[in-house]
Length: 87
Image (cartoon, rainbow, N blue to C red; front, side, top):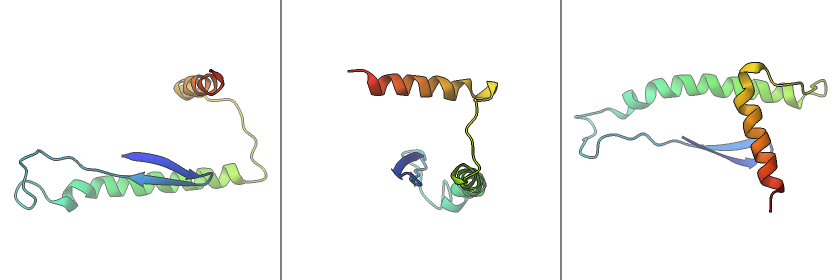
């Protein structure tokens, strides 16, 4: 899966499913079976993301500190900010 920002509020999602090089569709795998579980969970994830974004876009939203379980996100944010300002 590859997610690429298109604009402030739009992200393009590209998906690829890999199977064995010599696999034959219809014999070794069915595309609907390969993608069915992913589709179910992805649609739920996207709904959560859309709802979260609606909250962030609200005039009542106020950012707060990261939760302790989000230390990886905070680390990435700090690294990214440093990378943006480094020559």
